[in-house]
Image (cartoon, rainbow, N blue to C red; front, side):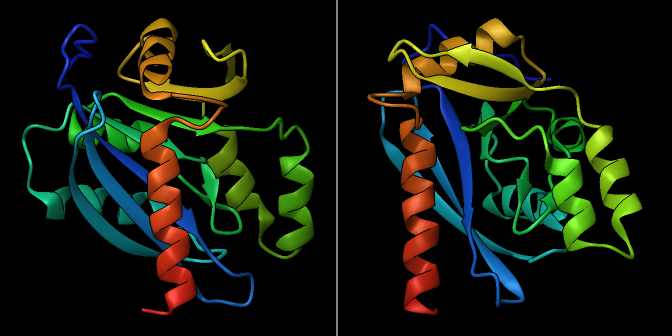
Length: 191
């Protein structure tokens, strides 16, 4: 398992965000390889099923296709993406041997009720997947905004220090903000 060397200026990571339309069958995931001092060093794209169970495997495939040994961490915007496609950050961390941080921006206490609503005949497996995730931790960034994180392969303090380093303003770490813009742009352009 690689450790976060937060003192390193060129600490390189993969930031992943997604975008989808509810009437679409697939969402677009955009991955951005960037250093902690904001040098963009690559892109990767993937698709996951809206309402499906393939987001974790899609993210692992994106990482593998990059074929890069210099990535030191993975950031993911959201753990429940693409209409309840649940990301297993433990599996991603184990398979990649990297620290993985899942970032969310809002409290979502009623997610199990929402899953039951959207999947009335098949909600048990999704709720089981969700309940296997560690609980979220609320952190306050140096910008005074709060985030909720799930972390694997690093401590909460290391995750907070990394996110502070990557957040220029507001609550969105810059690599995730750019990855989100890429995903939305690709979705709108219908590539």
